[in-house]
Image (cartoon, rainbow over all chains, first blue to last red; front, side, top):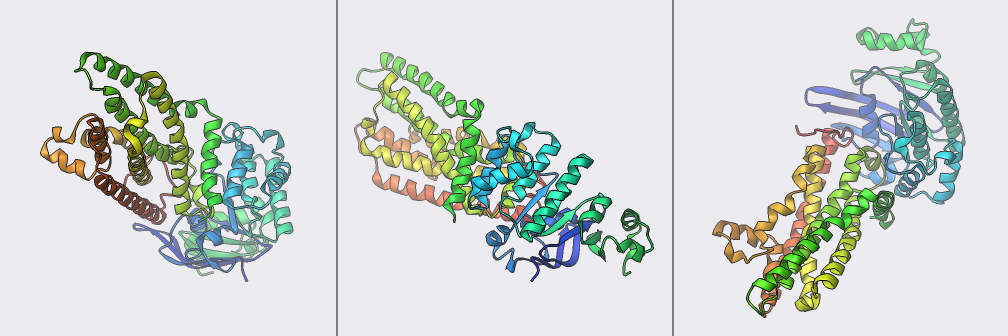
Length: 246
Length: 267
């Protein structure tokens, strides 16, 4: 059974179709890249999976639970980190982790917080307010929060966007370790195609709200006459119609 | 509903208040100033007015109760504004937290923060201006209850309004107690007002508290029936305010407002 099953999902804002009848699954131990140019519908899709945006049509099932009829139970199996949603800057790192850990009703919360502070090298920032941390440090706190409840489904919206290459690599390693240990499924958006190739076992290319392409990021470019994933990305962004129906 | 998650909303506010003098100070500063100002005014009035009438329970008592109402309402809205100011909606509403738990957490926060204010007001009014709540007898309980319930309903209503209209609209919320005060007769009998204002007064629960308070000062009994009606009315307003909040929340889920809550949301 997939950990996430999205079927015929649609979101319309006025005359704009942000997400257009998309369907896909994410299974355990899998990192799926959700790729596409700005405005393609990636964040809208993630927001609907998080239950903070209501679709016009379609279903989202997390670990067998429909998100709209069993919202609280379904969401308890997920967590997320997004570059545009830092944790409240007026609480310390430890306070933020405690508050969100309690909202997810994490068992042995103090122990879990200590583990994550060590795992993300945040021990020295424990009592610092999140607002005074650098963007890279805030990203690590956000990632620590996203793993508090050992989610079965982890949603990561550009998790390394504000990190330097060395820190980004460390973060990628930690996320892969987390997946290997927990068996979680991950939906990952990124504009860094080298990162996607390194981390994702499968990618979905979105353009104008539709899934245009799906496949292994290592073989997909060649299948469409492109040398690299970045070239393919640019082709999707500039000429989506030429790839539609391929 | 999970009480654990409800208390987490309270805990967040306690963390914020504990770590910030600028959040702790307003819990008692304005109301303390109000008590001192009205305390001296009532003392002065007692020296120039007809002998035998004590302005302390009539005016200072009324101001104290009105400030209590204001603290209750602001207790809810400020706890909500903390999530507005820190742009925390996406984080908080993407957790298993239910909307009923969130609102309950705001209300519980308000009870705790208002208690601080009430204690400070009572200490100043009692020890510096000889106000004794014994004057009102057991009626002080329904007085406080009605004001508490109505404060909660306005707090929830105000929070829903800000959720719908955006952070800048918080300036509509702060003056709400001031807009209501002329209608509920905090300092004067409702009979002083013109007919159209009296019609509005009748649907505002605090009216019955202040009319009852004045009745007691004049040696008459406060109407238990009217206070009962005021309590039912205030409970009805809480129900309406909660329904309004849920409606706005659901509409925000459809429009995407929760996910991209920003400075100006009026559309």
